[in-house]
Structures are given as structure tokens and as C-alpha cells.
Image 1: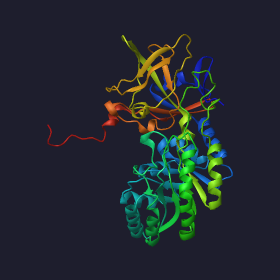
Image 2: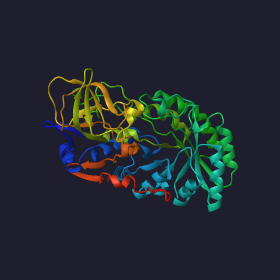
Image 3: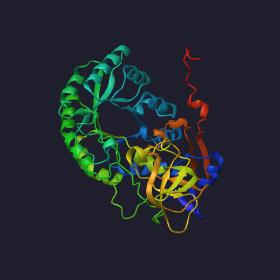
Image 4: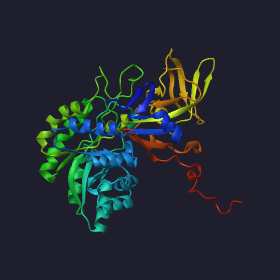
Length: 431
């Protein structure tokens, strides 16, 4: 099914014309398809059938209250990496017992807040954190359920900035030192070791790194089950999506690629199930990008077209502060006009108004010829889009819209400019 598609030459999100949303809320704005979010969830859930597994949505991919609530209603837990995300999850209706708290730098105050809220599980990433958590739990008179995140030293073969399972990465405890950490946890009176965890990176499109990592951790999990009676093995998230062109090449939708050897939940489960099933442990999974990435787009307006001797610059009102992935990761997002265009494509740089040469969405890309007042959609922006936005250049955060069928709702209003500095004050000694 196509969730973002041309109908009579106009791009729609499900049954709503995107141009109509642009006229109502202005640009830039993010638009999410509820049907696409549900389909992403269903595809993942169906793909892992046969595994004794539960799924916690990795909120860092997209923490919109509307998105979290939608996944929560489908039965998802929440994988969080901050107290702010914990409070977002609770506000969106995720029960505390379905929340998993990960992250390498949890403060004692944050651990206390998590324990007081009753989060279901804390993933510990260092021996020092074990000691801190034990002390905090003791102050509260509680016994904290924990897993320990192991770093298996496996190269995820993805972008260096989103690889998390190598020894040189900050995440987890070196697998060679993990037994000592579990022994320490077993001695600390206020901790209850319930599982082992791993996560090797994001945007993986090949199952082999997952297989290698699981094979390295399985012997440890077997030992831990015998010694500590653990219940869970968290294999993390990281299954990637396809960002490459689909609509521009004539395919109906980028959701269903033909002729692409992409990693699917079915392939993922088929490779890992034979390795995991003999353990007899419940498997925890934390997908994010896979179930939200292709469910959202960023819509922006063409303000100017500037032609130089070497370049055709399409200057839009969206910028790197709205979607930083191209500038930060050299990431690819397919870009299409909201009104279907004919004619020969023009090699173009799509750039924003931020005062940085790195403020671009693409360079030297063949695109349909557009002019001032046209609108463009940046596809596959439902993950690591709005969540990474900033107020750089004192630019407002964009609006967010959720579409369901023929209905559209603004789920975040555009930030008024004075709110950007609302928490600031001038020092009393300044005139």
C-alpha cells in the first residue's frame, strides 16, 4: 500500500493533499502517516512471529507524543535514553513496567527518578553505574531489576557515527570483562540481574553483523542463565530502511521496493531464531527507525532558484536545523515536488537559509525543474528528523502533522519565535 503518493498529479499523505496542509500550517512541517506507522509496526511484529519476544519502541527515533501513543496502543513498550524520554513515554500512556532505560551516562538523580516511576528495567553500561544504581536503590529501599549491556566488538558495517558495538565505542561493557561485571552485580544487595543486552548500531541493512554479535553473546547468556537465572536477552534494534529513490524512478512507493535485497524482519528473525531459541530466554527488541522512518516526510517551500555558472541552487525554507541528517551523516533523502512535474531533470543543490555551507539536503542531484512557490517533500524523514532539530540561527521548530485516512491533525504547533529565548534572562549587572 502506498501511504505517500501522487493522486491526479498531487502528492497526498493517505487521503489528504499535502498542499492543503501546507496552506493551513505553513512550511516547513513534518507529516506522519498513521497507516504507515501501523504498517511498520505490523510488518515488524509479523516478521518476528515464532520468537518469544516483546518489542519496545526506541523513542530516540521519533518521540512525538502522537507517535508514541499510537505504538503504545499497539502494545509497544518504550526504549528510552533519558529521564525526559521517560516522562514523554509516561505522558503518552506507556505503562512504566513496559519502559526500558538505556544509556551510558545516567546520573544518580535520573536513576532515582526511574526507580521512583517504576520503570520495568534498567540497562546498565558500566561497573561504576552498577555501584551507583545499587546505592540509589538502597536509599529507596528497593531492589532494581537490571540487565547489563555487553559490547560484543562487532562491526555493524554502518556509518561510523551510529556504530555502537565496537570496543572503541562508548557503549556497553567489553564482552571480555562482562563476567566480572555480572559477578559484581550478583554481589550488590539492591540489584536483581534479569538479563543481558546488546545493541551494535543503527541502519543495518545486512543480517550478518547481527548473527555474529548474537553468536558471540549466546555462550555468555547460557552461563548467566545458569548462574543468575536471567530471564531476558535484549538484542537491541538497528534494522535499517531504504532511503534510495522509488517514487522518482516510477515505483509506486518506497515502502515496497522491487528488486532490492533489503533486510526485512522476516530475514532478521529467520537468521536469529535458530541461535536464540535454544536459550529458552525471552527476547527483547528495540526497533525505532524501521517502524517509523518511512512513515514521515518533511515538506518545505521553494523560496528562490539561483543559477550560477556552475550550480542550480534551489533555496528552500527548510534547513539543517529542521533535518540535520544530510549535513551530519551525508545522508540521502529522496526529494520530490508536491505537484508532479514533467520535462527533463535539472542537476540541483537543494539548500536552506541557515548560514552554513553544510546547510543542504542534496548536491548535484537530477531533480524536476521547480520554481519559487513550489513545494518539495523530503521522504523517509519519520526517524531522526524532528527529534534532532534545533533552534540554530534562532529558527523556530517546525510543526508536526499526523494524517489518518482523510483526517489531518496538527500534533505540534510551530514554535513561536519568542519561546526560543523564553527561558533566558539578562544578567543584573548589564545595563
